[in-house]
Length: 152
Length: 136
Image (cartoon, rainbow over all chains, first blue to last red; front, side, top):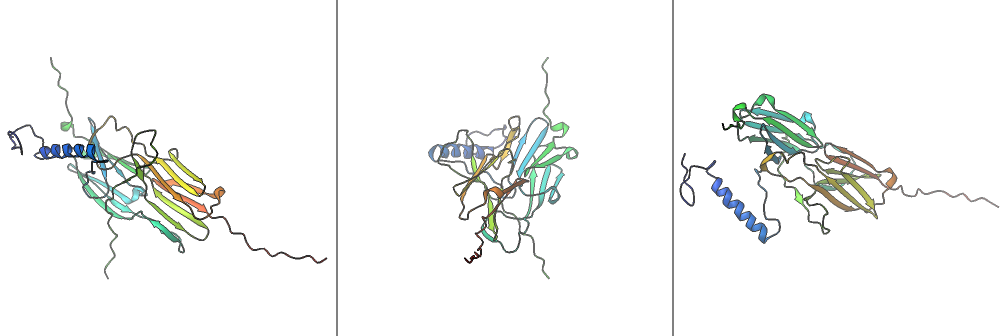
């Protein structure tokens, strides 16, 4: 498919129409980081929890920081190419006559749907919750794995 | 008649800290969220430090300054390709000055699910003693 580009000649080699914009944005951020200290404001969907999505040949991995949450309060579902993580963080009430000096931790419900870039096999999804870090391994569907083609 | 809905959690960015001293190893340093409260007998501190285990956690208390240092390990991300990165993994560091005098022998620390619970009992105030006067 031939995509119109914002600048330059039309191209058909673009994975998404926004690739051009992303490239411009990354260039701007690297320019900013040369000028000022930290530069890159983080990319957020604006939904709790923040996730890191990585992949290797056979799996997608989704990691999230969920301290203080037990596996009972967490629900993970895989439908189609989407992974949904929802649950509730509870903070246990302390004894009555305590005086708070600082209260920065929050409790509450959360729910987030993550759409994975390729086809997945929902049956083989596994998850582990260690030290407050959730790691979900999502196997790719067979047809979505890269195939090596040998040259004779 | 209306049920109270549990509040929904909003996303919060991890607070990065710029320390004065340079680090020997490169990496970001974050400030963990803490709750501090006290009762009559003890001071309790709860800190969210996901990814930190008891090996990588250091709690230091000297001269009334409490220092928490933890390191979260990122597992085998070298073999994986990053697609979306919304949070960084690094060290946690926070320091507090304690106004109360703490009985250091009795401090207990508990790390579970990435949450540190530090209970610091206060030094018992000198209980008033009656001094009997012996005659003669």
